[in-house]
Length: 243
Image 1 (tube, rainbow, N blue to C red):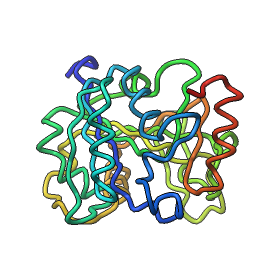
Image 2 (cartoon, rainbow, N blue to C red):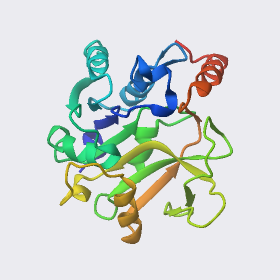
Image 3 (cartoon, one colour):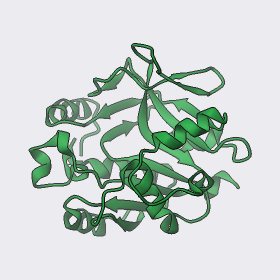
Image 4 (cartoon, rainbow, N blue to C red):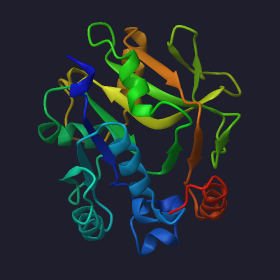
């Protein structure tokens, strides 16, 4: 497996966006505009810059709007994974899309954050540490000290050798999951296309010492509520990145 073949991503765009109401009463969350363009377009642009050629996007809430927007996108070859009959969460949605993703390792990306790289592209950085013989999944983490729009206690500690460790009983952890990972499809063997969180698989990989992570060193904006839209928009404009 060479890094050049790692050119497929699944984008998770099927959520109901309940915390983003009332904006998501009339538009799916990935189409909420920040910095002059929809959230999902920030993801598509980052993926295209990172050498991604094909994106599988799952849809559920206001799926017709999502499908229409994706049909107008030309930077990547896009395939829709239809979850309109049942929302499958972060794990089950990937399982359902496996026939569309192929047999090679692929990336999975959330669509509720804006990732701005300072240097090397985030997709490239995950490829850099990918070792398919010894690793099944690599997460992108972001330091809590510079995370914007995130009010949680953090998700992970990160050892110098790249091993992530859950926050557990600690009051806070120094890194938040940044919404992007690279994974081998073998981790989904035996899983069903039913609602479950990807955290279940990550915990299994941590126990087996098959999970690694890298720390993002650019800007990261979590856009999870209506109140996060205006400051994110202002920050992106201040950085000269707004469309």
